[in-house]
View (tube, helix red, strand yellow):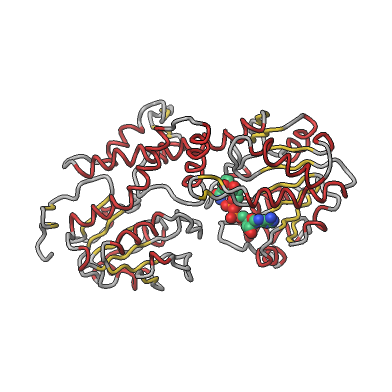
Amino acid sequence: MKVVVVGTGYVGLVSGACLADWGHEVVCVDTNAERCAAIGQGRAPFFEPGLDALIQRTAGAGRLTGTTDLAQAMRGADLSMIAVGTPSVRGHIDLSAVTAAAAQIGALLPTLDRYHTVILKSTCVPGTTDGVLLPALQAASGLPADRFGLCVNPEFLREGSALADFRNSDRVVIGACDDRAAEPVERLYAPLACPKLRTSPRNAEMIKYASNSLLATLISFSNEIAALCEAVPGLDERTIMQGLHLDRRLSRIDATGQPLTADIVSYLRAGIGYGGSCLPKDTAALQGFARDQGVPTPILDAVITTNARRADALVALISKLLPDLARTRIAVLGLAFKANTDDVRVSPGLRVAEALCRHGSAVTVWDPMVSDLDLPSTMAPARLMPTLAAAIDGADAAVIATAWPQITDTDWTGLIGGMRHPILVDGRHAIDPARLPDGAIYVPVGRKPAGTTAHGIARPGI
Ligand code: NAD
């Protein structure tokens, strides 16, 4: 089939390249000409493992192209997929990019020589497809609803493992207005053996929010347990969660008696909070949507509040060791919201750096994928350093904010020697303390630092 993907971001480009790899003819359209040009040059305009090679292969075979010209792209297309951003603005979803894309596609529907289905891939609150998208398509096309197809097909891929997630999808959700619209979407995903759930557009929209809200809930639950452990001596969140993971409803015991943990267990771990372009905005959008319906969301409210507290909780942990934060220099290592991506949207590392700046610390930051970051104004006092060593040289403490292997697997022996105080605060439980040199002070989240007094850490030399 010929598929036009509108919005060439993490979801649109990964979906487009994978669909082209399955043999479909895919045209990626974006208002950002640089993104389109990158496809033509056989490279990804952002970092996602494996994407460069996939684009090179599919673009080289002539099955994947990029353009800013939607009209040209739509000629002879069977399907168009809207994959533009849906940010949360002041607690409500901003649908302006979706409605703009719908109006542009709608205007071209009467020119097509075949039945065409529009797929909404972007994450949108329930009612968007029938209440916003359908009227926008009808108004722009002048066509009745039965002359074209409309489906919701939410995406569940994760940045950092997006290609594998798309190719090994655990489900395909198709929220269709009617069977005629759904059938070509089901054919599009024919190479996937996973369950294909057909439902209404509203259910499909809500499935994505329920899914992301559950993941956010697990993270905040773990962080709430961690906050308690950080306050009470002798409690260790890591061990407590280990005990929880061994529940056979989370870890099946194999024939040799070894636990096989379910992937979802990775969300039951403390850290410095969830970030990125999905969980924060989707929980906020669902909260705003529920508020508009007059439906209270006490669990979601608490999930969001707990998450917002994590940066300050980490600063509180550091101040137990170094009470006079205004006289410290702290290195924050990792600005991408998680490893294996260059995405710094709603990054916990940035939040921690900002919180430290507010407390008067001199802050240096480093990330292997973020070289020319446009630091937000609240981060102005923080200095982006060219190397890990430069960031931590002379620092009083280093905070691990992203579990990049370049950070966690580094040889800390030489690096720690250059610090003013050898304090490593592990916001991701990413380091094996046994690999640290003697004298290093390892402070993971979810534990009250040992030996701290009201005046800071009671260690000789500090
Ligand atoms: P993104 O910000 O990376 O990319 C969006 C792209 O759309 C940009 O390149 C932008 O220039 C383009 N665009 C905006 N308006 C356009 C228009 N009218 N015509 C053509 N292009 C236009 O977004 P993303 O992270 O890929 O997310 C897209 C959607 O998918 C969002 O709704 C998001 O919630 C959802 N989603 C994202 C992820 C993820 O991990 N990023 C996972 C699942 C679902």
